[in-house]
Image (cartoon, rainbow, N blue to C red; front, top):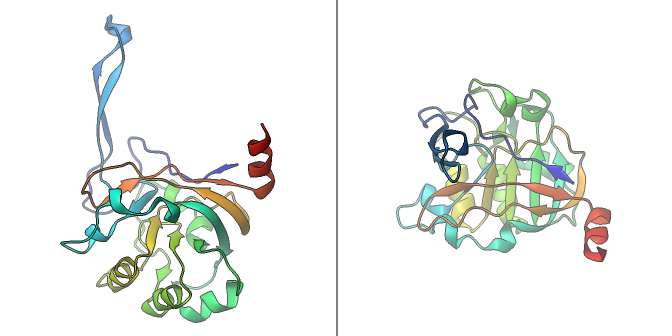
Length: 217
């Protein structure tokens, strides 16, 4: 079982302009209160998160309307640790013809441990428009990547818009450094935040053997 979620804590890397994570203690058993309770402040795109169509379309669906079968089910982890931009040709070379409808792309972002570094790195690897169209053409349901955006920095967000308009869920900020390429079962449900543009997720992968064993317990 692999937990691929980025820890949410003070000092974590965030997208430029997003608020830093903040937790405020409202009550504490240490202070004699009956219970310990915190209020938290964070972006809907903090850490490992899911993008909803509303993120880039005024009348797009909120994260509570993203089908859960986009977030739960068979997934292939694919190694794409080369180059600075992922193209359709890269996907065609590395992804098997009969792949799962959900893909997690492990790039040099993982090798460089970008999600674990405190400062934002704008040189991260992302998909170009040809790669996004490849995913559409191959009826991929969900795509995830190992940094804060599915496409390179300083773009017009055409990749986001194409994928979200075609109903493809986008997972970003996935920590893939500790998992090897292969087939898994993915659990990555977002919070049921009504009418919002995204949500942090707790993204977990299970091997087929582990899943079978859990069903027998």
